[in-house]
Length: 386
Image (cartoon, rainbow, N blue to C red; front, side, top):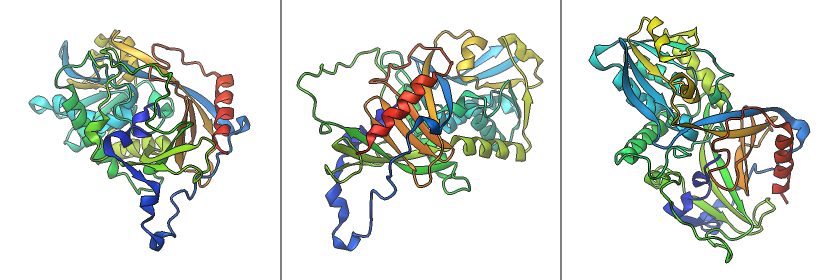
């Protein structure tokens, strides 16, 4: 949950509903909007792993285009920043359309993460025979270490670096992905589900401190496009002071899609294999290595790995560390306060330091886990509740 837009900022674009107004009179008194919001058992002894993920950020946005490499047509599909899962299906549609041009029906996909699996399935459903070539598979791909929340504009591009048509393309990819994820709701294992989010504050939302620095939008700031999705983004609700269990006085509730990544990746891989797909372990060190593949059309979904494989220095790592707490029965929500976020998933409770702004972790390629920082984050999470 490294994008605040889908926790709190949605209220600015879609309007704020009063908590009291939702009550709708005594006839609806049986509805408890805070049911299940019990404190998380936030103690270091419940940490079962600590992971680090490097998000592949490109100032110009995701690279989805064709390149001729010898006799191979390579379709690049990487560089989605913190929006890989959220934009995956829409990106796949665009990449597969390029890959199947000229009647090609035998396709290779490089990479078995979120972008690779969705591209492979999309190509299969378009009638292609597909083979995935990958050095790593779940649970070792970076996509397995994602936060797992719907965040389609999370560090996806830079204000002054995108071309004029980028916003329209982004919106098309986001809407296509959002629509497809709806088809996964309610499946066994809950690979995708709606869960509530709570944004907390010590001061009223929308009020700036008198000593706060003015907000200046710069061309080198991250691009925010969430307002384009206001019609499909649930509206936020401000909760009255004293009506919620959190320690900070002010709380705002929203709802968003949660990706239970372990089950989701198993679901996608199983669908791909059942439909006749193959996954072949293989490592590539340079573009010329692709000549060994029999397929003439190749979709490159190597994520951060494209920086080395394709010598693409436009990819900037954005480091994120997660402390994983044992899943807790009944806890299925997310919360953001200060510089910390928590998201309860079926496969673990994600606790993540996100910093005070989106530059946190930018340019940091260190993939070593910091146990001390993980424990400090969990102890900080324990202070969220009164």
